[in-house]
Image (cartoon, rainbow, N blue to C red; front, top):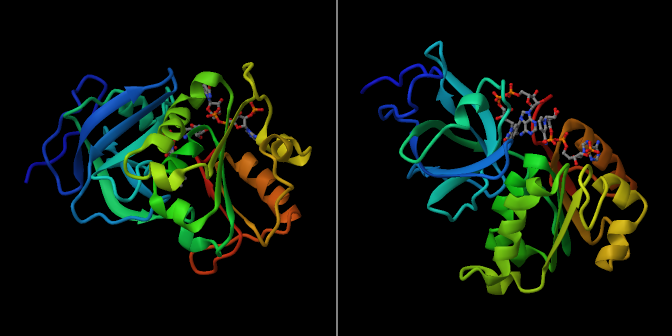
Length: 272
Ligand SMILES: Cc1cc2nc3c(=O)[nH]c(=O)nc-3n(C[C@H](O)[C@H](O)[C@H](O)COP(=O)(O)OP(=O)(O)OC[C@H]3O[C@@H](n4cnc5c(N)ncnc54)[C@H](O)[C@@H]3O)c2cc1C
Ligand SMILES: NC(=O)c1ccc[n+]([C@@H]2O[C@H](COP(=O)([O-])OP(=O)(O)OC[C@H]3O[C@@H](n4cnc5c(N)ncnc54)[C@H](OP(=O)(O)O)[C@@H]3O)[C@@H](O)[C@H]2O)c1
């Protein structure tokens, strides 16, 4: 077995096979700060839609440089998809943003996470609240048939600074009703609520504000949220997560976990 070589800015990313190496099959750039990519899936990898894994590249020191990444593809997909930020001086993404089909990344096949259906009690309506790259776990859950089997209504809210940052999510949501595999299941259950905070768009504002002043409910024709009917998953910055938790608790929802399912679950989209 050959070793993965340390990656420097000058070295191509193509590296020899290792047990945890997967091959990049597709890369798409959405903005200067956001891109998505697909990689081969280890045959033995089983995961629940919404979970995350550690992925990365070989660092300059010869040690793997790994970061947590939500799997954006659904559990039935034969490849794995990821949706990523490009932090220009970020140890991993300053390099990861240059990957191309045929390159290899490291993927530790140990999926974990709380944004899974098992962590919620049965309900009628599920809310997916995402900001920025926090859309990634919901890109998985929205493409999973189980989501539509479990709930009568599925609402995805996505808040970004600019309109271009909504594009990855918008494309996934808009393709769903015509998807040959789950389009029929999706039917008219899915509602999409994109908002921006810094660039003009049809719906402006932080999702927290729009929930607190009732705008979201008015726009969607919903009375409000209750612990009997509503379930929620949240994925954003620490600030968003903290603020939304308080709002959801105000509606009477309690935080759940894999070991103790309840009415909502939260995961960080990033640390810092
Ligand atoms: C559970 C979990 C799941 C995650 N899933 C994803 C994912 O699906 N896609 C993804 O792009 N990142 C995700 N992240 C963040 C990811 O682990 C890395 O932080 C990111 O890839 C940047 O790595 P880096 O080494 O370049 O910079 P880091 O040193 O890791 O980060 C530098 C700084 O960049 C900012 N930052 C990092 N990640 C993000 C982000 N995603 N959005 C906005 N600002 C950010 C923060 O201010 C951070 O302090 C996740 C993090 C956690 C904890
Ligand atoms: N996105 C970019 O264009 C960009 C570019 C370069 C660097 N960065 C850096 O990357 C980091 C993350 O940027 P990001 O835009 O991906 O993520 P982010 O800062 O978490 O913002 C994503 C969205 O969430 C909203 N939000 C943030 N905190 C919230 C809260 N407590 N309650 C409700 N809504 C909240 C933001 O609204 P507000 O606009 O009102 O905060 C924004 O619309 C930052 O450190 C930033 O400086 C971002």
